[in-house]
Amino acid sequence: MEAQAVEERQILEKIPALLLRWYDGCARVLPWREDPAPYRVWVSEIMLQQTRVEAVKPYYERFLERLPTVKAVAEAPEEQLLKLWEGLGYYNRVRNLQKGAQQVMERFGGEVPADFQALRSLPGVGDYTAGAIASIAFGIPVPAVDGNVLRVVSRLLARREDILDAKVKKRVETEITGIIPKGRAGDFNQSLMELGAMVCLPNGAPKCGNCPLEAICLAHRAGIQGELPVKAPKKPRKAEKRTVFLLTCWGRLALNRRPEKGLLAGLWELPGVQGTLSAKEAEAVLKDWGLKPAGKPEQLPAAKHIFTHVEWRMTGWAFETAEPAPAFHWADARELSQELSLPSAFQAYFPEMEKRLK
Image (cartoon, rainbow, N blue to C red; front, top):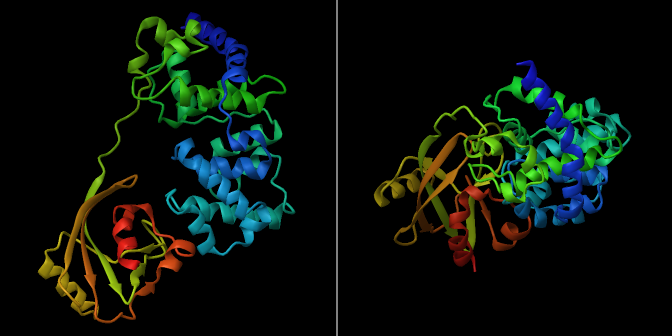
């Protein structure tokens, strides 16, 4: 056991020099890397949570163009925030970003704090995000351990512990802290993330031939890199059947505000009910809502949207109604394109909406 610990320590100590040499020559050019100011890094890290880099880029540029400072995001109307975030999903991220910005204005004089614990105290900022901001924006030698880093270390040291276990993450954080090179904390953390994102890929498909750590990787040496990392199986998602209504009247679309708590909290949605409804059942729901069809219903294609813990399986019905009902907000095309945001859960119905609102 002692020999194994010695070998692991020796491998860990070799990582910085090998990885930084690779990173200096191969790192992607990303907008938040070009100018790693604290606010810019913060916005990028929040956007990158559970979202691919390529998907984030255009959102990042637009967000910073409209809200270039902590003060701007702290004072922005919520509808503007949600519109800028539309399509990224996980809307609580931007709501917490605003709450955090408001706290920065109130508690830290408008300056993002150069302190890990102070960053960690902001809404929506966990250990990883605080570590990323602290190291990249301020050069503070703290780790930023996410799934990419856990995967890299798991393979590098051929470990079979469950990387979703909090104790395993804490151990890796301690190990990474011990090898952060002086003066390059941000680059080192980003190099580990970059390796996991571009080379040491998930789902059993690492590009070992392109890896700067190939020669010291125990999993590669043993030929077990495809078996790692180990993760406890997730609970199966709950499947919910839902019928969505695309209701138009006089060139406007009916929208409903979701409850303030729960899934898609407080966001606009296409009206809907639980279950899969026939045309006759859908017409009965319309009557309950105080609406009268102005023509025959049109069935829309079935759609599916996957959330973290639940999956919506949707049936859609489109109705032109004789008059609007006060229970809904009736939005025109301009409102939908410039002001109101609809979650990507309804993306399958966006083309139909646009066609009917022309």
